[in-house]
Amino acid sequence: MIQSDNADLDIEEGLIHAITRLPEKTLDRIASAYRQLLENVGEDSDREGLRRTPDRAARAFEFLTQGYRQDLEEIINDAVFESEASEIILVKDIELYSLCEHHLLPFIGRAHVAYIPNGKVIGLSKVARIVDVFARRLQIQENLTTQIAESLMRCLEPSGVAVVVEAKHLCMMMRGVEKQNSVMKTSCLLGTFKEDARTRSEFLSLLKD
Image (cartoon, rainbow, N blue to C red; front, top):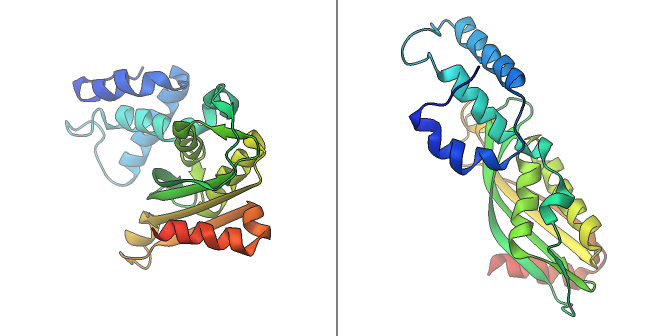
């Protein structure tokens, strides 16, 4: 069974306990798969530096994929409030960390999320939590962007939602073409942001500020 050493305690006590845990048997199988991976690339999984690596890697993978085990309605948790606000609400520079589903390598970047209220607003921190729910899964950036926008559209029913994600992909930086400075940008515009050019222009202007 997987155990944590002292180096893992801060993560164990401060973060992982807050997520829905994987069953221990599942974690053991993941650790076993990591052990086989190490051996198949020519390493000795029993040497001192790698002896606990499969267990640590399994715990890390549990954390990085916690979005599969999180319920969006539970996360929002009564954080939707009545409001007469009717202008663009924008949350910029939300850090995100995800795993590319093609190579299981990270992509790291920022999300910018905007909506126009239609009688309801959502707590500020919940916007970032929505981003994390979908980022903490195996992803491609295009789908991640759309999922964030559509989920906010469903839970708030606003006049419109706009999401822009910009990220660097280690699958492009560390392997293949090895381009270090490339940034991918994706967007999803729904409702007024898609239908009204002036609203869309105002949103893009706010992103530049």
